[in-house]
Image (cartoon, rainbow over all chains, first blue to last red; front, side, top):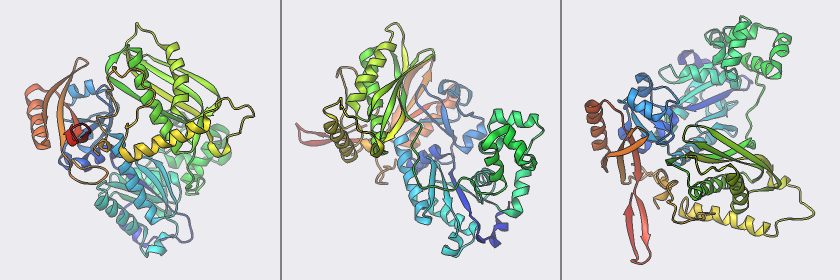
Length: 417
Length: 73
């Protein structure tokens, strides 16, 4: 797995995939915005009443676990500095990283906010560099232009690239190649539950069959794997053998759901306050819906109580929607049903599911909403206004202006106009 | 801190908050991150408790009546 081994490797007519993974992405973003934080133990928390969602290498060394609530973390690990997440900034920085990757290859699959698969096939010829030098160039460019450290794993399938990237985290240059020569060695050193797509439960099941490493798994024949783990098991086996089963796709898949939620700064049982908060989340989700040019068929409201009880109710819509005012009416009805004035709530959220592309939406013979076209235009205008003047410039569905508007302004640099 | 959109240096307020018994107590606020970090170090040494650091970037707010720009965190 040494990077020196990669010098002689080139594509040789095979497909090659690189997984580019940003190291402790949220912490790296905070360090980019505030360089004084470099070298310090830093953890990013989801909010004042939230939990740790990202840790720097120094914080990991202190033993700060992922997901620990803030109130516990400040007592157990006082040396670490806890910073609230600023997802807006993280999204912008993520786009900058992805833009650099797209400048290298036409096929880039953005897998998450901090990970992307890049098709490296043919790039060695194009750039007249081997995989290691190419990965190093990308790494340096991202570090120089965006100031975000990345780890790169290169192999012939997504699963192997992911494994290579995980192993690269422990190397000096944070680049690893899993080719024909190094693949078997890598698989022998990989515990079965470290494989992408094999979780803890499946790992236990596999260990029950005597499969401890990824190498043990690929030794089993296809019929055995398919019988016990179905198509997904067979896909994982092929990918571990270096056969690319799921190619890199530029097409943006529709998400299964879009949700938005945030804990309140103070617990509340005020219905108007809950409605105001819900309106903010509805607006945020509608904006995301319009961005992917979709409408949703199901709306759900999540209410979390002070003592961490979660209530969730959803409703299937007669016709798909993407506009704040229409969705608010229905969401408020759901909220009214769920609301109990005796209970203190800690958070509220909205979930949209079951999406239809606007281009594929069937027209109804008896249109129920005469303002449909107007609403669509208004929704788009809201998005343009926000793009021009900053987030939350227009607030939708506010029913009581006296209820303090607490969220949305604290962490967005976009508010600095 | 840096403005994520323009990459320019902007002012920000660093507020050190103690989280205790489900409540927040603002302990220290400064526009100088080095002072905030020094305070954190001192506080941890003194009280053996960690702190939560809120970062509030400076906002430009236009006052339509006075026709002037105000800055606030």
